[in-house]
Length: 170
Image (cartoon, rainbow, N blue to C red; front, side):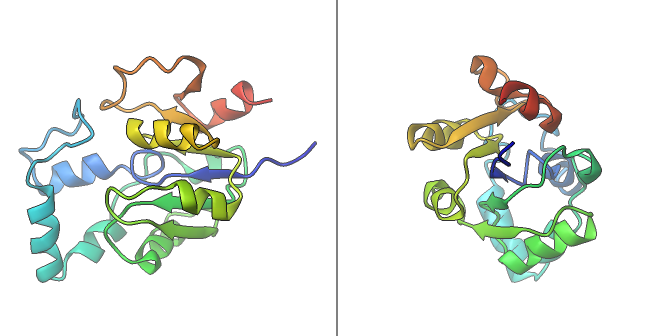
């Protein structure tokens, strides 16, 4: 059986960014109903960068899933984190995720080119706009369930667990 090249988003799929952000800024809802969870996020990122605390924040985000429960070997990670690829690689290593290539595309940037460059056949993302754009570009993408995307009816293209990917894609 051919091994599918499956790529993963990080925050909202394997890392619990919203919980970490809520711990830092308790006024921000830990289960937001919109992907834009904090209207002050840009200014806060800037302040954290100036205070040299942004990298440390990203290194200490808790995991959303146990890496041992991923039923496949991901081919890569594609993220829009506003930190260096090295910080994300260190986070993956510290938390026991498979060491694979990390593509950092930058905030609100498209993941399509990175996915094509990596040869991704299946991608998993929590952001509805990325889900639509990647599928529109011919990359089979599943929407990973989160409080900010539950209102979208994507039928069988929704994943509640990475274990489900092998059930829906055979």
